[in-house]
Length: 459
Ligand SMILES: *[C@@H]1O[C@H](CO)[C@@H](O)[C@H](O)[C@H]1NC(C)=O
Image (cartoon, rainbow, N blue to C red; front, side, top):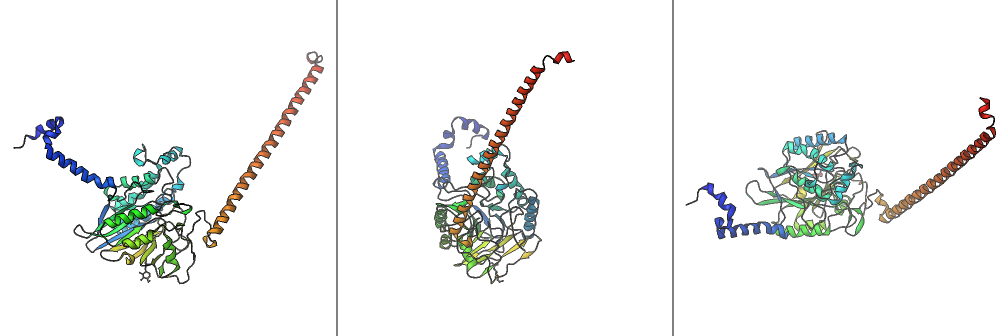
């Protein structure tokens, strides 16, 4: 017989173990141990899941370099996102980094800048931070359309009042079940390395996997210059996780292109446009090799706003998105703002997924093969983030940079010299004025004293 329900709380309050019984208490301890163990060991990270639709497809919209936060351009960007979502009705939107123009963060917000130093995440902020306000503006159309979305960090996302960790925590916290972004895992540099399992239309079997990988900001490993990369530790983490998971067709998103994106343009068939040098990192940390090893056969990036090409190297598709945002530069030439759409199909190799660009005027652009004659040839990644033309070679870029630094130093010294000269000149002139003034005053007093007898009598 069960005791009356109303008596349970009082009993629980005084002696939970007696009420639960030893077996139940053990079960509770076991339950929590099993639940917490993976999180504690870090072996199996938390993950998000999606599902192929009944036709076995998952339509992904890649919103690349959205760059909100620059004011007037934002309304156009939000409008474009709304349009693309309405036209494509995707099952997933991927925000592939540089969601917010961190460089547009108001310079006067000292408190925000200090807050970033500690990178404590959004939850500790009493009022919505600047970054958070931009973020909410950007995800509003995704929420309105009910589209699940997942984000990775770009090089500009950690430049405002949230650090890289703070941004991923914010992205994970806002949006409820629609946000698939995950911060962490602990111990890896940056934030937001995770995967999304895509389940079969019915049932629980995993049919495909999407890796979301943080490619950093500037510099790579020991290399202080050039663009960010997927760190060696992250490559190793993906390798370990993939070994524990069922092997299924997989693709990946990174913000900064791989060195193999550059190679894709140099050789073999390619579709789309190259309007600037590929800003890949100065070191190959092995992500491409890992991709081939674990069955990731498509890697999509953002970062270079004037590039939108897709090519193939050793059976792996290496593609850019299309620049989506109206902030920052690009896309150049005749390219419209837009978004790459990827139709992932169950049981098919992601290297061959149908893909097209949904453009700002509403049109759907299939990228034709070519061009035959390829502009912007390059053989090393565009290492100099300050814009050195890499066709000159990295050594020339370094020399140029040294020359520029020397010129800057000379300019500063010259400025100081001019300032010093001006100051001493001004001091000299001022001293003379004071001297003249004093002399004149003394003269006047002398005159006054010599005129004294005449003074009052003359009135
Ligand atoms: C490249 O162009 C060819 C021919 O026009 C087309 O069949 C193929 O699907 C295109 N590939 C991509 C990735 O756009």
